[in-house]
Length: 245
Length: 275
Image (cartoon, rainbow over all chains, first blue to last red; front, top):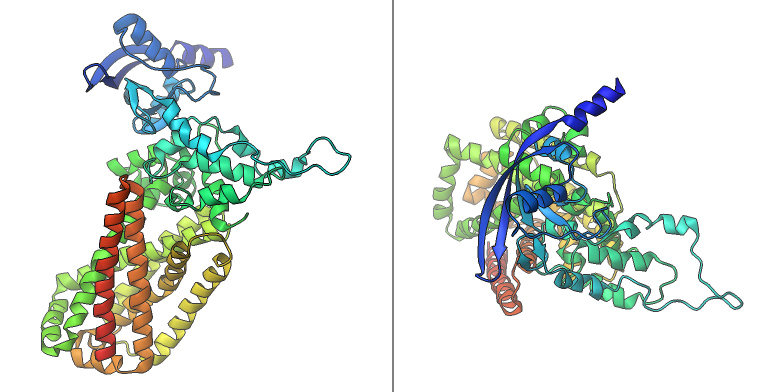
């Protein structure tokens, strides 16, 4: 019985219509292009892009590095929802949106380089500013050479350390990325505030309590909703609003 | 597949209905119901700013009672009565949802789904009671007793939020926005209800002027005007700060908002003191 179900899933195909937002930097031209293709249930959206490249249009440009949901480079908007194209299966997309027609657009956190590719360096600039590392470690006690974190302590922010900076949260945010440092960058700073090894609190709080910090967050929780890593991003930003540090 | 956990758990008959509304359900599917609620909060907030400014402008005609009475005659028209009832929905929704956000952001209350259910439930309850009072038209209550009760409650709510936030590193402007929000959460629904307990309470110039001559009521009105205008002004500033990228344009926008609200504050204070 289980084999039959599995076979049925494996053999099921969907007639898909993908409308992809294209951009040609040479002519500074944007347009929507529609592709029709038949695809199996467990194909991923990056597989669909690859098939379009091979079978229909070699000029369609997209990016994916690891294709295992770890690098975040394949983030795109599918029917308005920011998602990782390497994690989104056709059958899941059909179930989620209740349609076989999908509109694919690049994420909005940085200028588009071509088609679905954005300038990730510009997006990452915000994360760099948040300094997602220990800026000034505390002095270890005499006789101790390394700083240890207890399992109980790390449990408080372990979830947040799973962030891959795919910028899905920043794309979905009600505040947009215009003047907000972004949910992922803000969370990176909050994580280090929760880190007992970090002594530099003032610099982090200055960023979080600046005009591009937590005041731009309105707890719409879209960040939490779209996070491919299921991180409750809104919770970590709310800790900063609560004045927990 | 349900749009998110709120839709599947808070269920009842409201969410299945909402999930059939094309734009709302699409938005909820892509960004979550909290995102939709946030937009409702923002849109209702902008609507309330307009309402507040019109309200202050209308009240300013109290200095010429005949003009005020002429305007208030509109409130006897059934469709206007219905619109007056309808106006309580954005007011109470915005107030209660603001309370939910304060609990989430400043008091660490993470049971958000329950709070969302309470927000919608209490909004519906308030609307029902408010509608009943509009239909009855005959409730009489001592303004001093009514406002003593609600002013103390509102001040207590504001104090609770202020005590929680005061020592944090937030800017004073943001703290005041939250403190005024807590105050208004109680005071504005109370103000709305008081105005409709009896048509004569708010719709007859002489009755309003007589009430406003009490020092206590003057204090209440000034607190209401100051906190509502500050909260509204900061809300508008915050929206501009989200979306206006150019720093110079943002400053210009901030100054414009500050000037408009200062003018309306002056109108409100002059009216309260002079009547």
